[in-house]
Image (cartoon, rainbow, N blue to C red):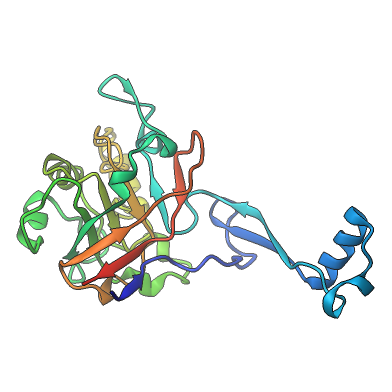
Length: 249
């Protein structure tokens, strides 16, 4: 069964990245590990193979939304229909291992969000409850670019509700976010001076999860694969990183 890795690599970001978006990792080599072992246990480097200890790595900055990740309903609002929204650790595991379908949106311009009719027209088969729907935009090609955040068509609130009504609880996209680019939504929201424009799909009052910042959706067939996307079990988290993999065949 071929496996396709749909997760972006995690690496330290360049120094010009803003703090809210950046990931920083401190790497310690084998010599540092040997020094730590001597401090902790009194075992000198002469008692270690090749005088080397363990190599370790420490995330000094890693936002739960700063790489390929799964959002929880708590990320969108504190309540949904008057009930406290679920955090990432409270979601059913069944949501995160299920048949997948790919919706091709590579022809859509940045900000040209997909509504219900677009999704229905492009869905390769009738959706079943708990299917995982992945929107292929091709914007993963810009993952390392500074303007990645401003790319992607996005999905509307109407489109998100349409998927939810068909039993979909996990939906993903290979762009920075599920919504249309936030800079475009911000311009429109300020011009029209009303809520429901900025972050509209996120705040569509539905309990569901998004996978954002996927890669390699172009390697998948439209259907006939299974997605595994288990998020880390972060108690109280609004999201968590996930290693997202497609099992094809």
